[in-house]
Length: 146
Image 1 (cartoon, helix red, strand yellow):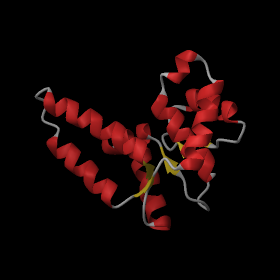
Image 2 (spheres, rainbow, N blue to C red):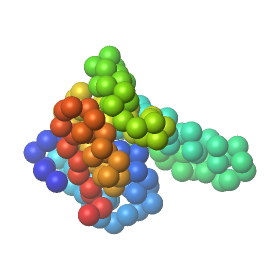
Image 3 (cartoon, rainbow, N blue to C red):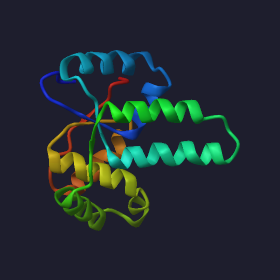
C-alpha cells in the first residue's frame, strides 16, 4: 500500500473491517491517522444497507451492526456515481461477458475508482482485474488483508 495517496475501499474491505480483521483494522487506523476519513462509494453504502435490512426483515438481530455502519458512513467520504463514473462503468459493462454483467455493483465501483483515479482496496482482485482491463484505463488494486 502506498501511504502517499487516498484510496477507495471496496465493500468487501468494509466487511473485513466490521468483522475485526486485525490486518485490515491496522491498515485502516494508519490510513485514518494520515487522511482523517475513509473513502467509500454510494454503491457500497447500498450493498451493505441492503444486506443489513434484509437480515433484519428476516428476523436476524443486525440493528446494532447497521447503526455502527451508518455511523461509519457519516464519518466517511462517500463518492457518488456521477456522469464520468457512469460513463466508465458503461464502457466496462459493454466489454465484459454476460456473466460479469450480473456483478453490477462491482462494475459501478470500478467505474468510480477509474474515473477518480483512486486505487481500490479489495480482496476481490481477480474480478476487479478483469473489470480494469475492460475499462481501457488502469484500475490499481490493493489488498489490506494481504
